[in-house]
Image (cartoon, rainbow, N blue to C red; front, side, top):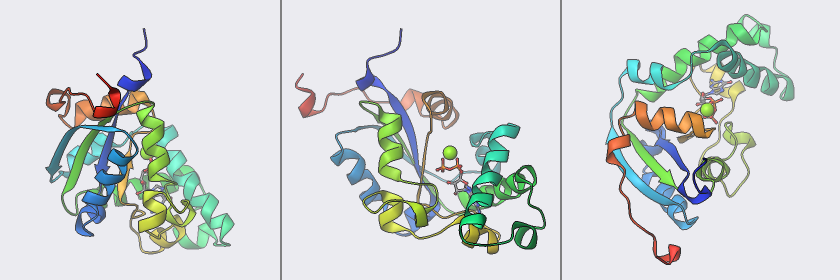
Length: 195
Ligand code: GDP
Ligand code: MG
């Protein structure tokens, strides 16, 4: 049986740019203010191998990374072949994945496990679009960063977008386990739970 919606957990990483810009507190504040419960929290320097295992390796995920690039190229009138040497999503994806590993190991991250009603979707909503230039104002990425696939690819780096957030309950379960946070979860009630 599926757990009660308020017991859903998700995984957030404040990325190295978020930590280095002093935005860890702001991210945590927004999560807490939304009524979501922080149940585990830890700062960590990741290895390349850890990041490699964190991001999916399947072809569909890697191709989707490439597709995001192609859609902003189209929107902003860039020629993918000229910029990346190819206009095939499956060829662009692996390049982006490599940049992502460099970015995510460039400094410490903050690992956070969050619990609450539809926590996965709630956190994605708070985070905003992957590309900060497309993220709504009022979201973490929209308010505190400006970057896009077109701009990041030109500099041969990952999009700097402050936080990672699991996209599905399955991804969250995998990530909480992978980041060694399963045994570090605290059980308590927030005042508004009224228990
Ligand atoms: P997220 O779930 O919103 O973080 O986005 P994805 O799972 O699709 O991508 C993982 C991370 O890769 C993003 O947060 C970005 O840092 C980076 N990224 C995604 N798409 C692109 C892209 O097209 N170009 C570049 N340079 N980086 C990307
Ligand atoms: Mg993702």
